[in-house]
Amino acid sequence: MPSKPSSYRFEIPPQGLQELAEVAALADRLSDAQKALNQLVPTAGPEDIRTTIASALAIDPRRADFIVRGLDSLRTLEVATKLPAADLFDAVTESIESIASDDWKDRHLATWKTARDNIISAISRRSNDDVLSVQGKIHELTYLHENVLLNSRLLTELRPIYNSAGDSIVNTVLTTTLLVRYRGHGLRQEMQFEMDLNDISSLRAECERAERKIATAKRMFQQASWNLTIAGLPNQEKAE
Image (cartoon, rainbow, N blue to C red; front, side):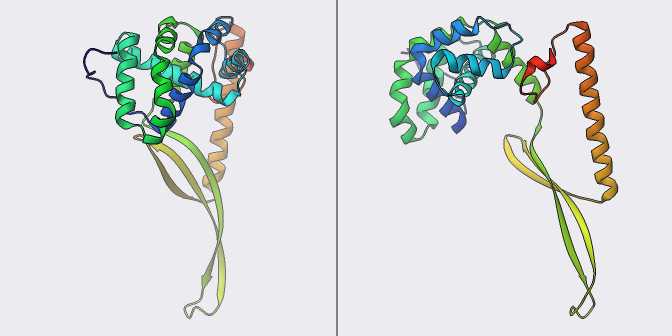
């Protein structure tokens, strides 16, 4: 246990708490996962990592995702704070005790504390160039932006135009709205843009050009035998 309270307090969102709970639940088997990951090349993609951990621990791939993200978050905090792994664990524990719900603490806190040595060992075993660290750097560079797109939709509407008396429809206008949902400043936000047919054609042309640029980069990197990770491509082996 720490000899004095840590000066660090981490804001851990509900998703992060769930990831840490999964790490704690399987802490005694993290070394098995690490051994399996050591067989992968550093450029292995997210699907390879997920499948490898799920197979090594005989768990659902979704749980494997939580473990990867949980360990990556701990490693990122270790690098950012420069705390030894043991001190980092204690600081995270203090933060959990401060912000986690009573339900989370009733269900997971004892397991988390019991897993202390195994989690510290898992953090300490990682290097700056192992497969999880490389993936962490890729994820950070991909989403290190003020605003990150979550999803978008094009909504088509028909709006009637009435006469001055309002007792007859004299025309109908077809409109298209671009609905953009994004995360900005840590919050889920939404914006809408009215578009006409020319806007839609221009947007389609820009998307097609972006796809051509991605294909060009992929081809040139393959020819040069350089590694390339394309954000959003499920199987990164396609880009190598």
